[in-house]
Amino acid sequence: MKTVVRRARPALGTLVELGILLPGADPARPPPWALAALAAGFEALGTVEQATSAFLPESDVGRFNSARAGATLPVTVDTARVLRMALRLSRATDGLFDVTCRTGLSDWSLGRLGGAALLCKHAPNVRLDLGGVAKGYAVDRALEAMTARARSFGRRASCWVNAGGDLRTQGVVLRVCLRDERGGGAWPWLTLRRGALATSDFAPTARARLAGGRPRGLHVSVLSPRCLWSDALTKVVALSGRCDHPLISSHQAFAFVHDAALSGRNRGSEDEGPPVL
Amino acid sequence: MILRGLSFSLLAPAAALVAPAPVFAVDYLTPEQVQSEMFSGAKTFEMRQVMLTVEQQRAVEERLGEPLRRTSYDLRLARSEGELLGVVVVDDVIGKFERITYAVGLGPDAVIRAIEILSYRESHGQEVRLPAWRRQFVGKRATSSLQVGEDIANISGATLSCTHVTQGVRRIASVVEELRSAGELE
Image (tube, rainbow over all chains, first blue to last red; front, side, top):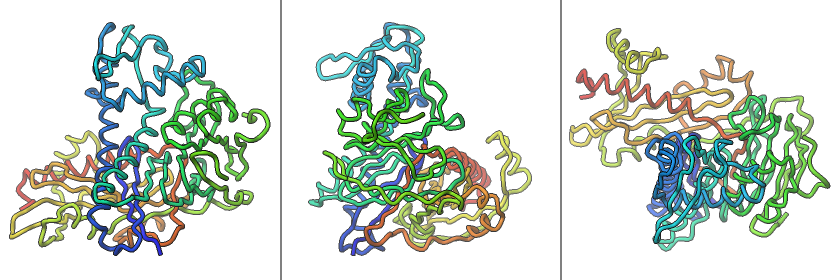
């Protein structure tokens, strides 16, 4: 029989749940290594949030947005990794994926001086918003941090992270329900044994907005090995209108566009042609 | 289905949606568990119900810039050898479709030390609006933070906002600060 310990806290503007499988442990008293791994996971989430949040003036992104044109700012490894992914996606989609939200696609660059990553601002009005990718990256980092902390106790952690619907599992079979955004409740949808899943809702009433996007009642999920990829690729699918976008296959991913009424019918990457949007 | 790097299988498609979607709920911690985790050095936890005076209520509302939803709060005072280590407050917030019970741990200086979610329940719009559904959480005690077996449920969808929790934490911090400055935490 398998038991788990799961904890949830507010982070990244949503609720984040971390869980660890505890085979053979007394479920009422989680062992120190499990509690330490959970703490390491939450700490990693906080580190990524502190670096990449556009809402924190002291974050790398906050400092960039308030900086003058011509400024060169040293940024954390986490910010640099997310920005590199954003650059790759931007190039691969001919600028459709744009973390400047149409304030200046080419008005920033990422350089390097010695071992440090440098973020350069080339125009006064360009602003960065990593909201479309940083949460997925934070999930990956939290999972890595939990695994590493458990390893320091000589344990191999089977665990998962779910940041408000963007989730990744490693060694734990998760039954994933899809939230009904219109009427509440959740429908059993899939079983995830390995990899990451991210879902974004781009309905007119949803919180998420596509940069320069065409208003669409889209509800997109992407499976891939990493949550950073899944999170970012939901935007690529929504912007391009294609479940079979070349970036999906090049990231070993699988995309779904859900029926607006969540009737259980959805179009996936293996369907012929683009989904009807 | 197994693709390189990920493995998943689709469950049977849901039936035509005449009925509302099933609820989704997770219990993480009981109030007793969370107070012990937040203040592991505490030897006793004193339950104390406080009622804000009209003046205290006004002061808190002025600081918050919004009206308080209630003026009665249950405090859990963590003590060791009589010394106050901190206070834990458990509260509920209701979003569009979700009910969230959470706990805030604050030091004797009323500074927030920790925030934990105790339970999460995703439900239907019409159900959330029913007073009976809201009342069922009054005095609720989560039965277990543990799930048994391989059926570990998670939920995906549009990113859930935690604005309600953030606002609730802010209210509690402000109330506890008011009580501290009035010497009512001792």
